[in-house]
Amino acid sequence: MSGLTIRNLSTGYLPQRPCVRDVDLRVEEGTITCLLGPNGAGKTTLLLSLAGLLPRFGGEVIVDGLDVVAGRPRDAVRSGMVLVPDDRALFRELSTTDNVRLAVRDRRRRSGAVDEVLEYFPALEKRLRVAAGRLSGGEQQMLAIARAILQRPKVLLIDELSMGLAPVIVDEILSVLRRLVEDRGMSVLLVEQHVRLALDVADRAAVLVHGSVVLSEAAATLAADPGRIEHAYMGSGPDIDGEGKRTAVGA
Ligand SMILES: Nc1ncnc2c1ncn2[C@@H]1O[C@H](COP(=O)(O)OP(=O)(O)O)[C@@H](O)[C@H]1O
Ligand SMILES: [Mg+2]
Image: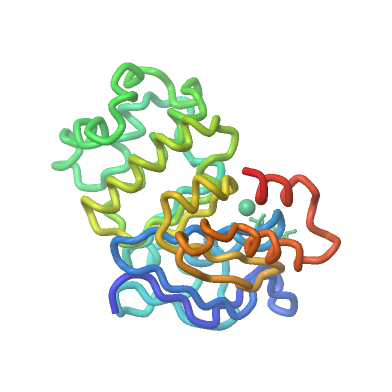
C-alpha cells in the first residue's frame, strides 16, 4: 500500500500518560491530509513521533508498504519521511542559498538545488544572499518547505504552516504545495490552523482532540458542512482555549 499508514499509534512524553492515543490515519500517495484540532490536542506530538523524534508506545507506521522503525529519526528519514517543524529549523545566520545547498546531501546535486527551489518559490530569487533569519515569515516558510522538498520526501510532514503568516501568503504557499504534490506524488500531512484554507487545499481532513482522532473525512465534505468540525472541537471539553476554538471555527 503506497503513501502513509498510521495504525493504533500511541505516543507522548511519558509511557504511562500517552498524549496521542490509538491514532489511525491514512494519507494516500499524491494527496494532502490536513490535521486540525485545538491547542494541546497532540498534533505536534504526533508529527514528532512520526519523524522518530519521540518514542512510540504502541502502533505501527508504514510508508509505501514498509514498516518504519520507531523512535529513530534516521530511520524515519530513510523511509522517506521529512518534517518541517513549527519553528522551521533554518540556519538563521546562513544565507538562503546556503540553507538550500545544505539541504542536499549528494554534493553533485547541490549546484542545481537553487534552480529547483526557484521553480516553485520564485519570490526567493531576490533573497538568495540574505540571512535566513532576516527573511519575512512567509519567505522563511517557503525556504523551510524548499529544504524539505530537496530531500525528496515520500511523506512530507508540516507543522503549523501558517503560524504568524497573513492569509494571502498562506494561500500562496498552499497552492505551491498543491503543485508540488501533483508534480511529485508525495503524501502530505499538514497541521494547519486556518481551517477554511486547509480544507480548500487538502483532500482529506482529520480532527484530533485530546490525542484521539474524532473526525476523519474528505475535505470537500467537511468544507460543505463546517458545523461538524466546530462540533468536534466543542466536544473537546473545558480545557481547550478560547483562541484555539475561534481560530478553528472562524478562520
Ligand atoms: N516537551 C513536553 N513534555 C511534556 N509534555 C508535553 C511536551 N510538549 C507538549 N506536551 C504536552 O503534550 C500535549 C500535546 O501537545 P502538542 O502536541 O504540542 O499539541 P498541539 O500541537 O496539538 O497544540 C499537551 O498536553 C502538551 O502540554
Ligand atoms: Mg503544535
